[in-house]
Length: 45
Image 1 (tube, rainbow, N blue to C red):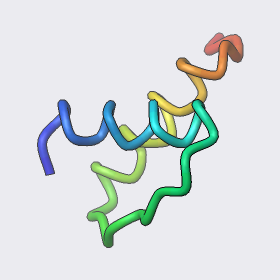
Image 2: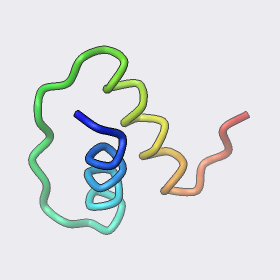
Image 3: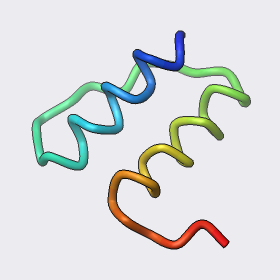
């Protein structure tokens, strides 16, 4: 899964759209969680 797809998926969830989350590998899942937190406005540090 590309970074672009991960960002689009996280953005859809933040906007409240009903979204199906596909199976991801460990690194993809970590990246997805990071983008989800970032787009929700949570502090990263």
